[in-house]
View 1 (cartoon, rainbow, N blue to C red):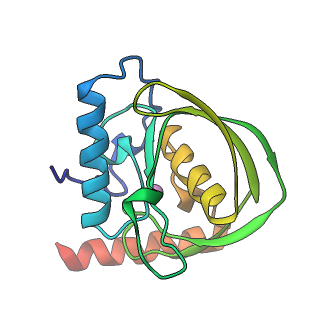
View 2: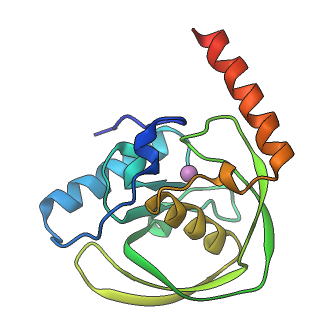
View 3: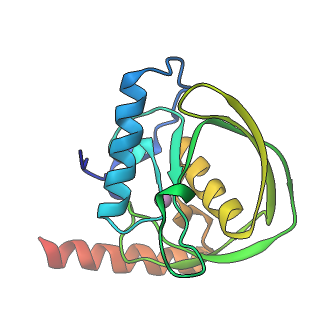
Length: 171
Ligand code: CO
């Protein structure tokens, strides 16, 4: 089922999510819905809080070299914890909760993450470049943060101004 995606400045996006304790059918339904919603919105990543559920769950489905978004590349991440991080990368990010805004953000280039899959199995994996960036972006959502908070003061001001203008045009 496609769910509604909350957009900035919805205060719910600032919620700090809680860990999943039950790896049950409700979790599986939520993960399936998040995947469907992400594809429907042409996204490559989604955190549960973006569909209004304050649980530490995120999905990432990267685009491969052929430009295809294959389900076999879907990564489901539950209760993530960044164990190690190194390097710096600047990457242009976007977010389904801040539509049509794309800005360069600085992140760690490489991270080692501990997480659980939908069956409750623990994994420890290292990710680099796009996957590392996407994971940090989605984990920020779980802590109640949006990528626009990482912009420089001037860029943030410019964003706020344009966002207000756009909201006015819609109304
Ligand atoms: Co986002």
